[in-house]
Length: 137
Image (cartoon, rainbow, N blue to C red; front, side, top):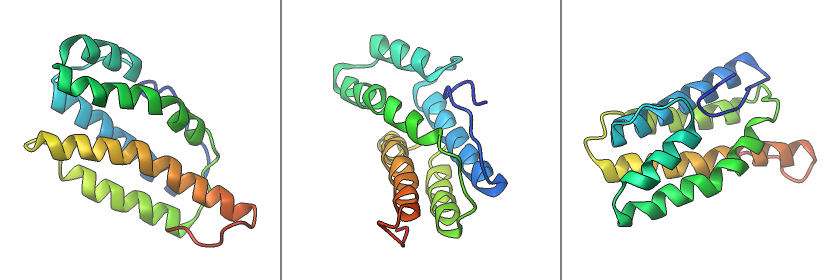
């Protein structure tokens, strides 16, 4: 169980490991970007909404609005799928380069990409299972 994100990852060990690493990187991005350590992402969102300047409230609101969809997608049993794992590894590579948050705009971009891409990757795979799609992009 990943307490911070409020989800339990299940499925293929390699897929779970890759997704877990990507989730850890994004947690670290949040912590380094805002210099805040809390027990859950909800606590983070609430704390940030009180602390950040007005121009960043849109970002915090975006994260809060996308969280339920992300969690729904993360409850899917992850399969062994080379394209899915490769996509997650690519996101790990890109996001881990921003861990130091030297460029805050890029770090925020990685977090936004995480909230967009993870559901996309998992949903594309699920659609493939239903015969609607055969390729994971």
